[in-house]
Image (tube, rainbow, N blue to C red; front, side, top):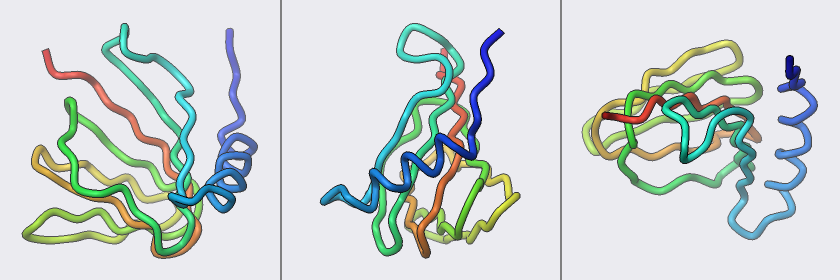
Length: 110
């Protein structure tokens, strides 16, 4: 069996995000392009964001650290440590209100 410390990986990715020009970093923990299920740790430095994009399938975000804002053209919702956000099936963006780490889980649409 494989065990991954999301806490340690999140801290590593957050350090990378702080050093990156785009203010973000990510690492796929499970799955990938040849799997239906994919889980990725994403770190965003405060004030940085993932611009509007489509979701490749059903998806959720679990906030591991910090404070994020998930938004669509019509509305937004804030998430903090321990919150599970359901990603809408429309164009959306994600902003790091403060230095943040999330676990993105996606099941690709068939």
